[in-house]
Image (tube, rainbow, N blue to C red; front, side, top):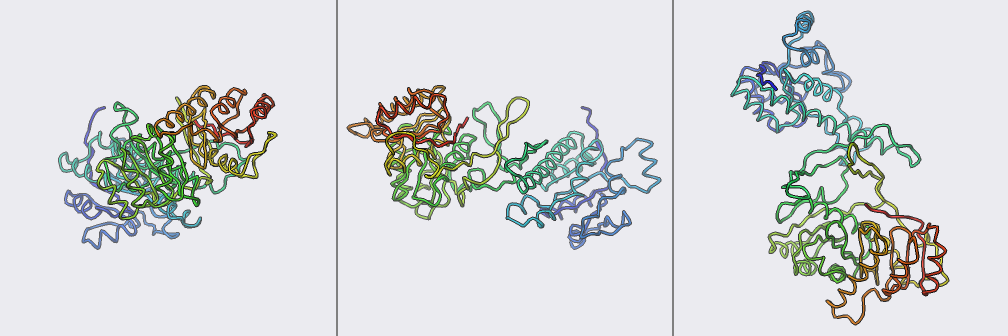
Length: 531
């Protein structure tokens, strides 16, 4: 790439974010740059005592239609798109009295912020910018001659080039152009996603095009591993959770911290509006989940599921943290705690642990809300609806001779909600609305069943129990048992009831095995693979 300096003689500034505007424009004027502007920006600059020329004076047309039409004019787009040094372009500019525009500073109508505050449909539509993206794309396309700034953070680099070089460098213009195209793409993605959500029906086919965009929220130290670069981006979906939570204290969050915090908070949200709930996650899998009469009781019961894995884990709760819960959580090393809120006493307890990250999310996400999740693969990405499936007691189909007891039914629904958030093949043992064994991510469902039971036996030794906590438990499987062996392994571990989707060609054999072992079993009719 050959670097060249493009002169900066004329700038068009039209911004909704006035941060740094006066200082930027004053510095441009000091360098002899003529300022063109529109509407509120022109008024703000004039009020600051700066010489500014209204775009309507340049185009010969007033702003009209409530400001919808003001910059969509050849004298604006010609000034941005004309190739300097091209005889035909320069002849057209002369014939039509089009002056070159060497710098465009535009930020878009705040559509994302309007959407985030829950505005009505008409208000959202009015905050869709048309002229701004058109100008930005024109300036970015012609970056060989034109610099484009899409947010106040761009001003400093432009001024540095102007003062040092008397214009803008090719390197800077290309970087700004790349950013400009990303900005308009992200903006359009937010609009497209919103309109799709407003009109989507379950029976609709996949759309011909899918757009995904975001705004940088935080550069991360590294990704899953130190040799990987990473950053956190926010989408227009203002779903409460780890991405938008406020970091109250502790070290900078890492990629893995955020990933685990998201997994924990999405799971604990399954119990919104119910009893106090606690989730402990390690490497994106829950290692302990429990309900309790209080948060501290829920935490202690979750911790007792797998004390070894809980060390250095992420803790999520479904209600504001109090002092007792904070004291219990801080007895061991914990990486991250995420909650809707924490009272002053709880915050004081956490403050004594300088490395512990405390995230306050404000509210819980809705597990049943529609939305999309994305997974990159080589050459593309996969998109699917968020797994918002919920199971009610009335949905269960009892398939065994023995019907489950009330306590078993309660634990079935609890274990099923947890299994939805465990990597497949997923097996969850639960008793009295607390997990007592979790097997995750194995290639064989039997292995997941055995691992969960073995971990429970290990915890029996740690807790000084006379028998494994899986004795008298229910077992949940995220997908059907393809053979009786997995179910029989759970029965040998002491499970008395099971919940699974059903649908295997060997369902009859699995049901017969359950009957012979005296187990109660329910089919959910719903699978929860999580890869």
